[in-house]
Length: 274
Image 1 (cartoon, one colour):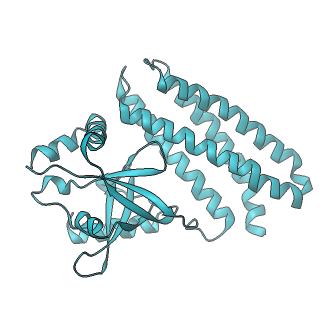
Image 2: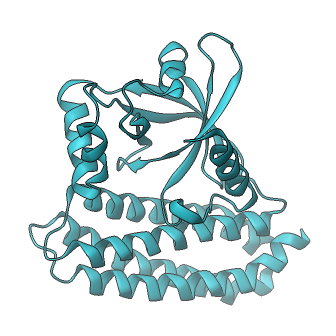
Image 3: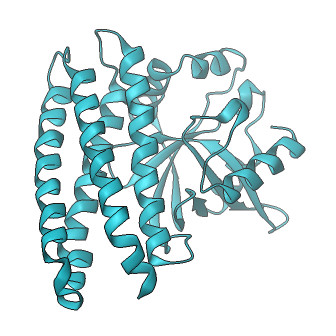
């Protein structure tokens, strides 16, 4: 990526909580900061990433099919401690270069989801490296207040649902391996978020604000309804056929959007006043 475009994407990413326009609009992007193998200076690069269904994400050192590995790859091989910015969180991660069957399986998933990766591989004789980034030191939300943090977290789920909906609509009767991973990762993330709210934020607010009892009860009930939809989506995704997936995703989107809007309306003013 040309230096000027690289800087433009970085600035836009940071200014808009991870959202960028132009050719990268709708892409899953991170900012990866590595330490220069020779200079020791910090270098930041925008990269597309893949979900991996667990506590790591995956990036591919394609360099657009160039004959040499990108500088960020050489840097993390020399020093695997890197910084990842998601637009919501900034955290320290450990980079691991995948090898053998694991690398090939992940790359095949990537190609199935986006044939552009195969195009990059066809341009070069080098094997495009696949790197796993696993969070090692968490970071706080990049928000000015608790209410703003809640809105940012919700917007991440909204954005991911929009991407998944578009991927499901474009997938036809089949369901690719990476799309399955994307759906399961979303289910896991939203379930974890709601559990954390029920046990943490809601419990704390209930003690401090008794007049919120009915509001918090409604939000908890909505969590339970959404959990049922997540279970149904997960069963469909892990099955051999997924003819109803788009319908289920649309049902989930409608329920989640209404829930998030109500929660923000009711809780953000209180969180920001604390």
